[in-house]
Length: 396
Image (cartoon, rainbow, N blue to C red; front, top):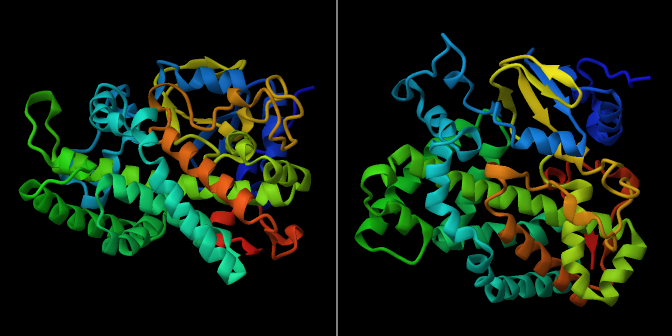
């Protein structure tokens, strides 16, 4: 018998506390599951690994639905408010050919080889953070250990001067919170970047902003909104998701003592900790919603044309058809590399190599230099899906 799923269940507080039971029932339902979001939009959830993978590279599922829907053209770009113009040019909202063109301008800075050059710099930063934590005795996993790493690393890559990084961090937090302050933060960041670009055109540095600010011709020409959108996405995505990965890895290790002991005994397991944390509780629950450009057969059912499609990475990464004991956190598992935490296909996470490097180094340093690390709160009191926002107190 197919599992029964309520039509707006995904937003139920009990499900938000632990969505994995919901995704288990979605997989057992025998087809895509219709949900109605709080704004009244239809939203088809898919949670099986094979089905999510198929959806991620399906040619009739994408973002720019206006290009496929007769009579519904996109609004004129110039008529949108500034924050909306910039949001509309984010890589995660574009399809080829524009997505391909813009991603190609920055992809070379995030290859495995390019990011590997940062290993010593990241290691020195991690050593300083861990040493400070040891002196303090009581720390917060977010503000004292996880947050400073991606904030400073991505800012260094992009070219944000060190004195400006706290302000940049504040803009990032406001934008990602989806609060009323988000558009104002986007506009303020855009003005800041306009000034930085002007300075880099006069006095270039070895950073991404200088390369993007260089005058381009023809197909490689980059207008102002595209440049702001690219840099904003890199800075925000490069921070928020990696902070989430590090904090959740720390919590999972400290609430699974046998896994924590294994890492302390052998810090080289840090790379395995990264992958299992990505699988078990990765930073992205559902990929930014896409649309069916036509009626699409997927997951044993039909998604009507122009409805939204919710491809759940959390659901895919707990699929028992792919992962042994999927609801068990185990850094020794051999099937972990099949996880989809970074997506797949043309929208595969641009910063995956960097996130893996930063997180691995932090877990190595924590295991080696903070062997007595423990939670400073009862784990039963933690809301396991809001740690990045709420913090995680630790005793060193």
